[in-house]
Image 1 (tube, rainbow, N blue to C red):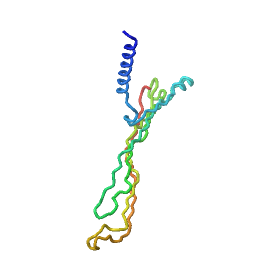
Image 2: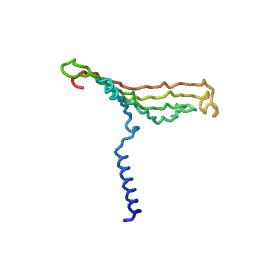
Image 3: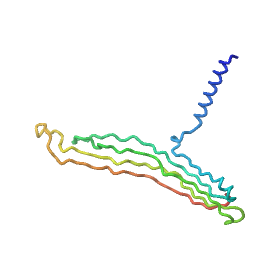
Length: 172
């Protein structure tokens, strides 16, 4: 077999292996949260004692599609001149597991606190305006009538349901 043939076969196998590896790996943006471990093993060995196990999750915010302006009959400008931008993400999560020596019997017991990452949906503030003129009317020979201008601010919105688990048990 020639060296060019071997090189081609090696390149094809490398490409296939990379494609299989990329297919099995989950990107952080698709997962919604990114795990954040806190390594304390070195401190445990240096101090000669059990330390808490700590980990966390950081959410990845994802912007949504803003609703476009809505045209309303009787107004010259659309209903939402500056639409609200939805952003979905989450509140960070944390896991803490600390040893409690000989509280419930022989060996180590533990106390654990877990706060899972919870979904958070938001809407940015928006703006609605109306011109100081009415639409053309047949009563005024097709001319608009003056009126008071209107402006309004659409309030921001936050929606979430956080939770936490506290536990005490045997073992570590």
